Image (cartoon, rainbow, N blue to C red; front, top):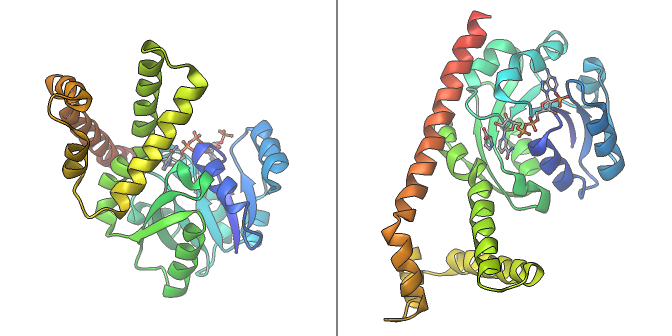
Length: 272
Ligand SMILES: NC(=O)C1=CN([C@@H]2O[C@H](COP(=O)(O)OP(=O)(O)OC[C@H]3O[C@@H](n4cnc5c(N)ncnc54)[C@H](OP(=O)(O)O)[C@@H]3O)[C@@H](O)[C@H]2O)C=CC1
Ligand SMILES: O=C(O)[C@@H]1CCC=N1
C-alpha cells in the first residue's frame, strides 16, 4: 500500500514507526517547513519525503492528513487540483467533519479516523468513519492499513468526538498516572529504574487481565482489596480526593473541547 502523509508531527511519526515495520507499506511524507523533521524520518524509518504535491499524489491514492485541525484547509488545498475520484483523503484530525473535508476536496473519497500514538508499537486503537463518497474497496484498504498498527473499530462519525477524548487522548492520561506512580515510588524509597519496570509490568498485567477477565473493573479491584489491608488504605485517599470523579470530568472536558474544535474551526475557516 502506498500512502502520502501530510504532516510529520507526533501522530504522523507514531504511524510511520508502526508502518515502517511492514514492507508492503510505502510512505512519502511532507510537512509545512520543518526540514529537520523530514531528514529525521528519512534516516530513522527509511521513508521518502517530498514537497511536491504532484509527486505526493502520484505516489499514492491515499493522502493521510496528519496536520493540526486549524491547518487542514491550507494543507489540503495544494492537492485539490490534482485529485480524481480515486483519491482517498484520510484524516486523523480531531473535530474536523467529513462534510468539511468533502467541501474542500469534493472529488475525493473521505474517511475519518481517530488513532493514537500507540501505533508506534502496533497497539493503536483506531476508530474509523467513512463518508458517503468512500467505496467499499477504499474502506477495506484503510481498515487493512490501520489494522497493521493495532486494533480498529468502525463507528458512526458522531462518535469520533467522544472517542477522541477517550482513546485519541487516552495514552496521555495513562502516562500521567505512570508519572504519579514514579513520583510515589521515589517518595517511598524505590529507585527510578526498578520503579519503572515494576510500574509498567503492573500496568500491562492489569490491562491484560481486564481484557481477558469476565469480571468488571470494580470486581477486579475489590479482589485485590483485603479488609483493613494496603489497597483499602490507598483507596481511602482516592475516594476522599474524588479521583474517579476528576478522571470522569477530565474525559468530559476533552470531549467538550473536541466538539468545540470542530465547530469553531469549521466556522472560522468557512469565513476565511
Ligand atoms: N498527538 C496525538 O496523540 C494525536 C493527534 N491526533 C490528531 O493528529 C493531528 C496532528 O497532531 P500532532 O501530530 O500532535 O501535531 P503536530 O503539531 O506534532 O504536527 C503537525 C504537523 O502538521 C504539519 N503541517 C502544518 N501545516 C501544514 C501544511 N499546510 N502542509 C503540510 N503539513 C503541515 C506540521 O509541519 P511543520 O512542523 O513543518 O509546521 C507538522 O508536521 C491533529 O489533527 C490531532 O488532532 C489524533 C490522535 C492522537
Ligand atoms: O490534544 C489533541 O487535540 C489531540 C487529539 C487527540 C490527541 N491529541
